[in-house]
Length: 154
Picture 1 (tube, helix red, strand yellow):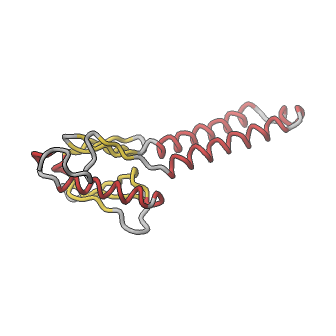
Picture 2 (tube, rainbow, N blue to C red):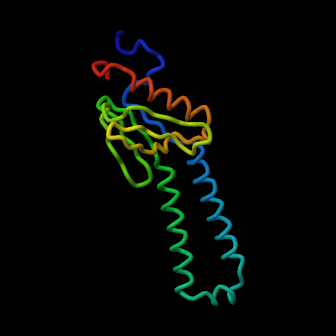
Picture 3 (tube, rainbow, N blue to C red):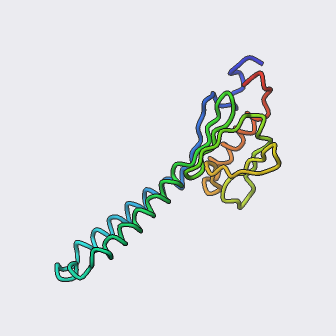
């Protein structure tokens, strides 16, 4: 089969990212910042003065922690390259050769897809969020199609 003749296969490199999670992180993050800022500036000066430096620092630390968690969720992705898959979950990146990945599954009700690896373990692929519905299913199908290709076609 000539290269590029199968329209169901994406051209490489190709990256999949979750949509719903990214929208939620940005939407809820901005909402939280706006509400907290409005509350802070809505306080009288006398009330703002009651907050110690440690209390202010604690609130900022919690905000930074929430931002770090949101960043980790929003950066999830799976990239198919000619030599394998690059899976980014949170702050960890793993490069897998095509031979290392046996299958990809997104079962109904699962939060995200899982990859079956040749060493007998499984690995989450958070780029395919179950909440993304058809988008995630299509992404999993595309990765399956790439896994089913002959090694010389990659």
